[in-house]
Length: 132
Image 1 (spheres, rainbow, N blue to C red):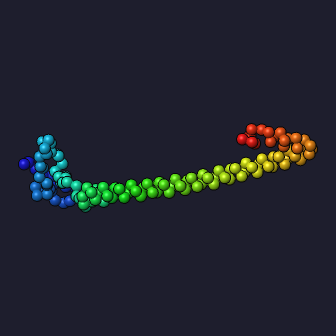
Image 2 (cartoon, rainbow, N blue to C red):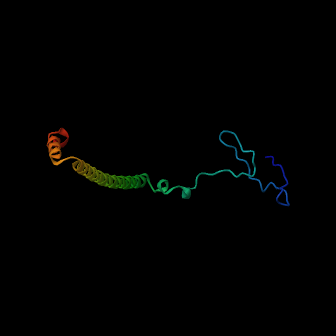
Image 3 (cartoon, rainbow, N blue to C red):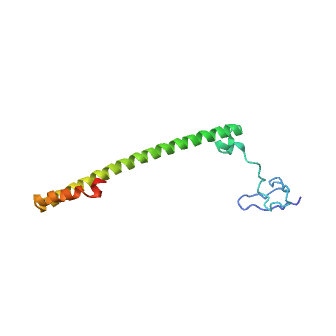
């Protein structure tokens, strides 16, 4: 193994062969040209997320089932809440529409005479819009 001794600009001593990590040949035959880089090892299990680190496959599947059940429940509650909001908005719209119609009819009634208003009411009673 050939190791070059280089002067370190930040330190007042030169690298010795003991400071350099030996280069291990990889399976592909390629080695790093950076002697100060230490070789990587396998992932440390303690750094993995909790879902991956679970004891067994069954435990992980149980955890996944619980998470899915919680998500499903949250989704149902959210949909129920949204349906309630939509229902209340629809009721408000209907009330507003009825109030506007009532106000419009009162304004029309004020404009025309009683006989004409009665005639209009009879006519409105015959329409499909009112009778369905």
